[in-house]
Length: 295
Image (cartoon, rainbow, N blue to C red; front, side):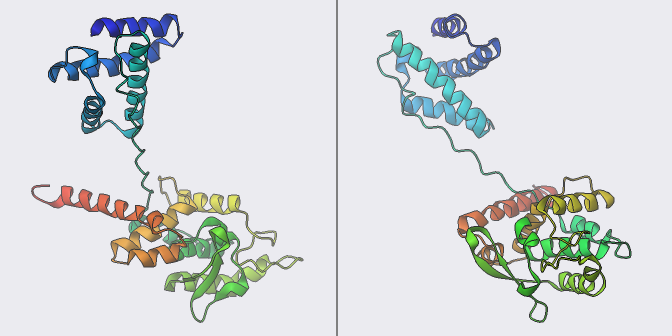
């Protein structure tokens, strides 16, 4: 069996012209397969069927190989067994029916409540734009808005008495989002003490204005969040959507219903919201491991 591997690697080098690094990568995969086959009493390549290759890939996954590396290993197997068929060394290609494993969903990053407090408490509202920037970040965290929704929020959509903001999100869908107490206070102070100083010759009804009196661009809001985080001494990469993730995660951690969170975030599909349950489960596992005597 090793002889066929050596012949295959030579073929990759001489006929396919593949790099030495790629040859080594395939050689490592096939070396693992050869070892697995030997342990399972398979002495010839024709002895291996699709179920055997599936079992081999499962063993790789159990050894903590990630989905991306598994897909690469699968490609190696497909190329190798296709080579064996072309050389008439086996009759049927057992790797042909194999499907690539799905990539694991990337869990959203979040901030803990202490870091959020640190960010908000660090903003000096006695300085110019302090009230505006505090109101922006409070609203991000209080209501879980998208960046575009913050930038496009209008005065006529805001109801300070009923504590709601009407926003238009993805798919041009409109929803009402509640405004928390601290965010409401920050907005009122911004309106009473700072927003009128930003109004220019051309009147804009956007809630948040730039120093030139126009609407804030998404890039400028990203910059504001990063600058405020840096000033607060927070080393973590802070960006607007991270505050939205934190909003959803903290609601879930404190017992909010997933359907309610879906509505607040403006997700059309509950499956999109369910990613936050995985974040919460990850946190619970970490807490258990840290504090349980047999964790």
